[in-house]
Amino acid sequence: MSKNIKGLVLITGTTSGVGLNTLKPLLRYGWEVIAVNRSNEKAIKIAEEFLTKEEIKNVHFIEIDLSNLDEVRKGCDQILERFKKPINSLICNAAVYKPRLKRPERSPQGFENSMAVNHFGHFLMISLLIKNILSSEREIFLNGKSTFFKPRITVLGTVTANYSELGGRIPIPAPADLGDLSGFKNGFLSPISMANGKKFKPGKAYKDSKLCNMVTVQELSKRYPKEKIIINSLYPGCVADTKLFRDTPWLFRFLFPIFQKFVTRGYVSQRLAGERVAEVATYKKYAKSAVHWSWGNRQKNWKKSFFSEVVKKNS
Ligand SMILES: NC(=O)c1ccc[n+]([C@@H]2O[C@H](COP(=O)([O-])OP(=O)(O)OC[C@H]3O[C@@H](n4cnc5c(N)ncnc54)[C@H](OP(=O)(O)O)[C@@H]3O)[C@@H](O)[C@H]2O)c1
Image (cartoon, helix red, strand yellow):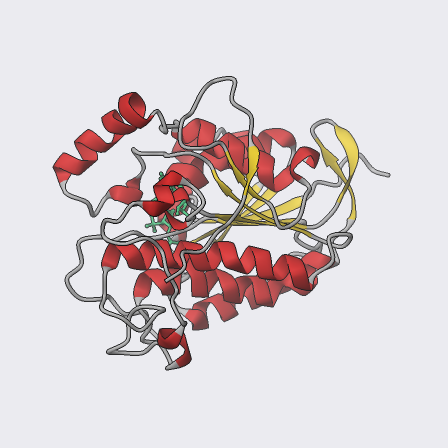
């Protein structure tokens, strides 16, 4: 076995925050990375500032706007054509959060945009790439040694979408709740903007989309045997100072990290969140399917990850 066979990992949304900070550990472990972003120009510029010249040689940039399902199809075709070796690990990270919208923004296909980007785009990407990912089981060179790597899909979830955790029960604007899915069943086009078909609540739209991400992990794990592929999700902690919060009021952006650092103690740095994502997506320790990994609401240096049950709200 040649020592040079690098594994191939795909991650979405590497221009800032958790995704950007996941790049370094992935490259340090020895991965070749496909970075999927809606602007290659922006992604390359930021990566050039953040990574060394040596590191960036192992990053391939692919442009896909996840809100546009046609672009997801075209981009996945391009990936399947361009890379001769299959993808070993897929990390669904990109997301938008727009809690101040008065009216829903619409994706090119007419869907409420945070659901389109956070869930539909990733769902379609997984569907189009899963055959390729399933075929990737082989030995790769990882962390300095030849390692047998089982295919893996890792999805970023969040505490605010998980009713089993305290953060999932915050009533403002409302806990995540997909209801009877009537919004989806009825086509999810204007005037429908919520999965449960009810009134548009922008903060809840984000939570609902993340709950869909986490439910997808649970469902996929039932459909694909754990002997063939590991499918998991994680809550890396509250990374309260990322650009995810760019559309919140400035006072919230100022106070939220302080509150998370000193009151809830849920705060984690972007660097630590990136390390956690890279580990969950690639370490043997996390090779357990259907698991939602969490470090809980209160962060402590010594604190270890644990399985967190994903619970939906009973409406
Ligand atoms: N921050 C937290 O406290 C926290 C906690 C739990 C889970 N998470 C999850 O962690 C993940 C990363 O969040 P973050 O905090 O790092 O946010 P972030 O800094 O805002 O990063 C989001 C990334 O998604 C990309 N993106 C947005 N819209 C896109 C689109 N239409 N197509 C392709 N890429 C798009 C952004 O690219 P552009 O530069 O083009 O906008 C950016 O690279 C998310 O899934 C989030 O739900 C975050």
